[in-house]
Length: 327
Length: 254
Image 1 (cartoon, rainbow over the protein chains, first blue to last red):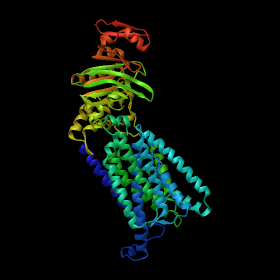
Image 2 (cartoon, each protein chain N blue to C red):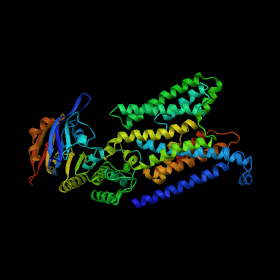
Image 3 (tube, rainbow over the protein chains, first blue to last red):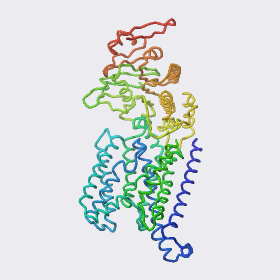
């Protein structure tokens, strides 16, 4: 079986990586404004500039974000034993949103060379991680169930604070807040992309290498502990890893719903529940999915851009329902 | 050296005691039935022996080592605990569930050849080949219990702690289960089994522990333990003891 599993993993990795590669190549070539491929091959502006400075970094950001959200979603579904868990279930996205909304409300500009929205958002996510890790450290009866309930409470508190700030904001800021809360993929500097990659790639790898432990933890703390897993430690570590991926990407893109829920579910039906297959498939499949959604977002109603969160829901939702009913 | 040594073990949730000063030893492979009314502390006792709960006082040792000195992996190599029920919202296959039993012995992403042999052996022993590739959560309660027992067998621990393993089984499967438990005992394992099937316990167990309100009120052979005067105050119903034509004892109550 190990050989079969190895070949299954190789096949899954090859297929999903190919899918991501195709999305990465085709995505930047498609858009509201048609590119002259002759100019592009000859590296002539404006086509070359549009491709290199706008579309390629944007596509790379979509790939990283989709990958991170899908891996976090699969992880949290195992960690919380909740098929409806998403990267935002534990309050990290809500806290990141609160940070971003606070930055917009206070008109904070740039800090340390980065947009204040990103930094405040990252601080919000980090605060939740530290808060929950401290609670877990102080409570000897900490479990994934208490983690889920704490996440729900944090979500509620942060969402209320966002609503408060939103209601106090003027019309311009209110529009900015609404726009940020919709989530969106924009072109960013390559140096920022590299920094995001330095978080997403090792973070995802860490999660992937513990795939067998997530399998065992999916049956509950008691079953996992009875099979030799230090459930408390693994739950905290998994939460921190998932929160790191979610919080970092949310700081840059805003909250993007649905990806972390539907991609793992769809892939589970294709490759099975074993996290050794599901997580690598989610990494590449989730990346490809968000690239496709972002490409559609900026192409279908061009020159108007549809928020990518709307596209993920409109595209993924009906397909997901169809898949469930087909079963 | 005792396989299991309980020395004045107490446990409680907050101020409410669940186990009270339990002392017992198991020195040889035996099939021990733990009986008692609901809430007597039977499941809590085996969860404490499995190291899943920490005694509020007293010590529990496995093969001479106090549980506090063993990490989770070391405990899981010594004891295989099977709860009454396991639920997973994620659709794992039966084979994947059985594979979880190998966790205390494996490292890395892949199972070893020995892990796979152990899984095949456990699946064959529990007669679950027919649904090996089916989703675990689609099985009946009785089938799920056999799968969990297979995972425990794959875990290859010298001590088994089973919480009502026959609760959902029909008479044929009950008989098969107890035959298998006896077979595992004969291979040198200690089997602690929480059960409400008093007649099966009377017939098949080597020893019976009777729990009442967290206290071990009897630790005796089935013949000694299964007496109406012993069981009546514990279960609070009248018991009658009978002898079958072949000499086996059985109880009726009510």
